[in-house]
Length: 345
Image (cartoon, rainbow, N blue to C red; front, side, top):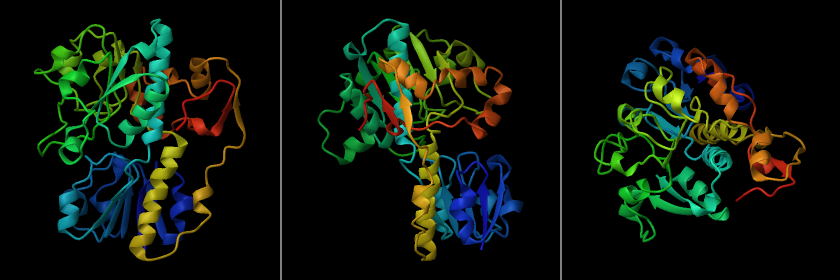
């Protein structure tokens, strides 16, 4: 069996070597020629998985080790009997921690009490649920918006989009969708941007394209935190320059998230082939004893990981892709023994 794997997939050599021959390359370089004689394709977000890539190949299983879906033509895969698995939720804790770190830093920088602010969470799936739970532990009032969930669930506490956009802090956590009753493409647009004021903190850790950037760059806000961009890596330099944190789509790049992405695909591939899992695989993350001795939440979080270094790293946008591919080690909060209590779930 031959597997073609994006070389940014975490621990691909240890996790997938038992299946057969492995060929690795950068996700952007995976093309029709490289997958022609492959049986399995494992990607992250930089490979467009569609008819152009697969039509002349023998690929029968595609695994995506990231949470997003907009890089995969699922209809094509289904029509051609190609099994697809996506590691939905693998990075949800990492993204929630990214947003909380941003809020705590902003509260210190701008001298406000975050317990007196409202947090509008647009998209209450894997990430939004974790973020809402952490925010509530910290005493932050949340305004939850997710029309697709409201269509199928009884969620009386949810609010409409205009209400959520009127929050003090507005953060996006939707997939990027173009069809259906509630497409998220250009969700924040000319019709509703009036809800965003010069006192609003806007965070995009969802997908580029959820917000119309041409309008955003002309709109005065209190602060922008931008991790996801249109046209990555050729990002909007006006927004980048004016953002408090401008990061290269790394909110979900904890070691834990990367491992879970690979591990979830590993589980699915074992099931597809019909073999038992190697029980040692689940124990690949073992950072040992990690301690933080700070007396406040901001310094505790920044000792765990200071995201400002990510902004500095892509001051020259030519570093966008290389920095993502060689991203520094970052463990999630539960690995740390901290003097100051963390909002753990």
